[in-house]
Length: 314
Image (tube, rainbow, N blue to C red; front, top):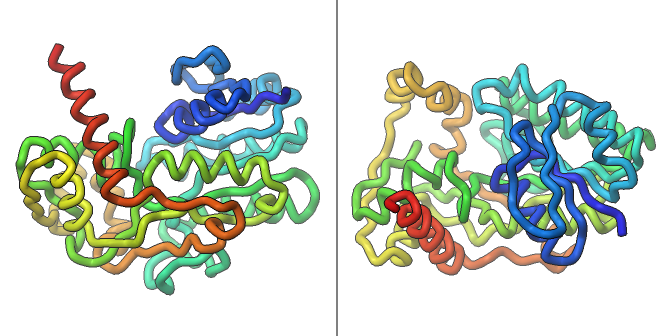
């Protein structure tokens, strides 16, 4: 049986690896530190994702390579290009399908809502333009027959193991404690979010289905609700009262002095100030996938955070 190579051991990479292993597929999870999920069918390996030779050694006879890497937010412009090129080179050398975890940044501000796979990628900001170029590179290389590739776009992550997200450590622990959660932008405009198990299922599905190759896909998301309503769903699951505030854009400059990620949010502020809604109809009808209902996803998310807090308290 062909194995699969997952590059990155964060929540996306771990979710994909676990899903594959539970289905009986051998998986190698590659990261700088050699960390990752534990399973008899998962091999953890250490390598630099910018090293095409190292990647090729691990991807030999692999059916698919998953790009689940996640460079520091403020270093995308410098860190993404060598990783992206190394993965493309590896896919060319090995024939493995290259599956990229993508986001919605490439569409840019003032995008038509809901966002669909074929919409123009018009981002001009540093991060959005980088993601647009990576997507265009994959589509062009596939069209030219140099490699086989596909990618899935997700919105803001939430779920088990999701910590550094708009709906991660800045929100869920405060909801559990009954404290106010401060949201970016306007708390009452609709905002699609992507539940991590739905993200992993989408990546595994498009890796295995030839109909997916050479095209972008959108992760199935539950119907878009406001950030306030997402916090309310988490509060219902936690048995607490939802309290929601807003982080003013001006505060990002101050917070950015101490946290580079907060400074970088200026570029994507529009995603939280305007409606940010995805359409995943094409993915759902093509592959038979469906989004996990928000209340169910919120309950699982709250349970994971509670377990995490209990472990930390021991």
